[in-house]
Length: 156
Image (cartoon, rainbow, N blue to C red; front, side, top):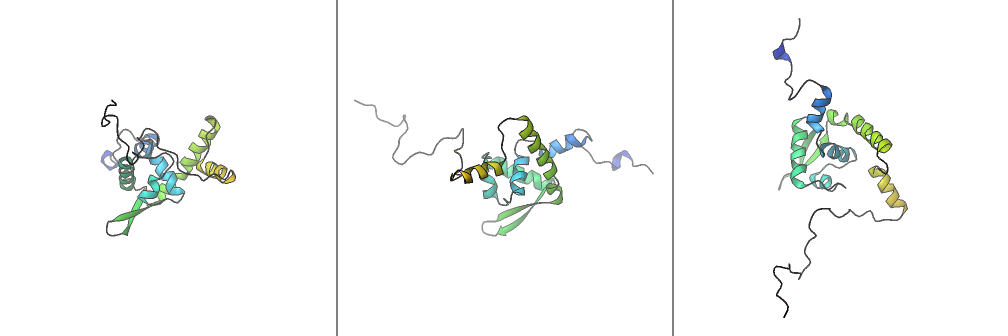
């Protein structure tokens, strides 16, 4: 017996597996969140501390989307305020093959790219303290006692 058209799942664009994968994780942040989770990060704060400096609103949105898609699950680990630990599901773990393929392609075709493990290893060998890089495009925090040019008195 053939399945009727109503038995087929509804796809946002088409039944193409690549299109549907991109609908789930094709934005510029989702695979980086999954990469970090595969490396052991499991809390909002830990995921926020990625080298790419994901904005807080984007991270919150991606965690919701990945949870709704069944790629991750969340478990409360603190009650007041409620905080969650995020864990990859089998579906999320299976994206490891995709990440490895993208890593391999990037290293083969984009000169100078390095994995986080390579960067960490280089920092350890050179005795670097591996401090996070400053966020690009964000204002530096004001120093105590500093005033903006608008609030300065004109010199006489």
